[in-house]
Image 1 (spheres, rainbow, N blue to C red):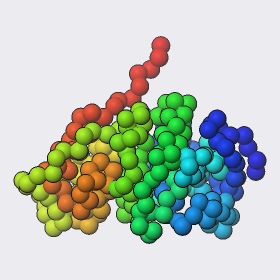
Image 2: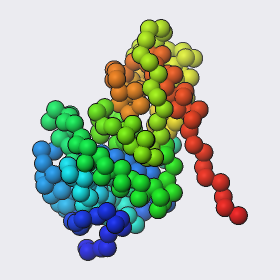
Image 3: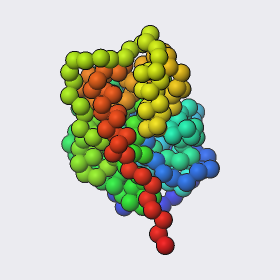
Amino acid sequence: MPFAPDSPLVVALRPSPNVSERTLPIDMIVLHYTGMESAQAAIDLLASPESKVSSHYVVLEDGAVVQMVPEAARAHHAGVSSWETLTDTNSRSIGIEIVNGGHSFGLPDFPDAQIDGVIALCRDIVERHVIRPDRVVAHSDVAPARKDDPGEKFPWGRLHAAGVGHLVPAAPISGGGFLMQGDAGPPVAALQAMLALYGYGIAVSGSYDDATRIVVTAFQRHFRPAKVDGVADASTVRTLRDLIAARPGEAPAVA
């Protein structure tokens, strides 16, 4: 069904039928890569009733923005997911697909013009919906067992420098102790508790199981991409602690 663009940055509309009603206020942005060989193939899929998937926006390689779902509607972009204990990510978020072949096509670099477009769109959305920086997240953050996009080559640092997203300098990779799959005990429970506190959907079991390895891998993709191996080394743990310490709070109420 036709609709008016929500952002002045939109250059084209391609309505998708794969929408439903929101049940939560918008307080997140979820970034994806398309993971297909072309922008047209991705847009056609997102517009197909048979696919049952959709996204609010698609950012092309040249930075142009196509809107497919009005922001007031719930797009079907995140799937089974969780952030801050809430599982209906689609109802609380705006989904942005970034045209990129992804891991299946060699994880190409993201063109500068495209990232400029992503930054401009995110800034516009963040300003209109007053979204906290730490709620601009990756698809792999909210669905770590299923997804790895937008991937370890996505330039989160450029977004953060432009005022989008939450980031701290990654702690240097060095020697020292580490936690890995098969470990158990209070240190593992403490790691799981910190990941859950930041927002990841992880049980605090005290056992470094496969689910923990997967969440650590997702964390590294976003916040410590120099080494993505699912092992919680000192750099990973220190970066996580620094993120939590620097995490913004809720905006104060205006009298």
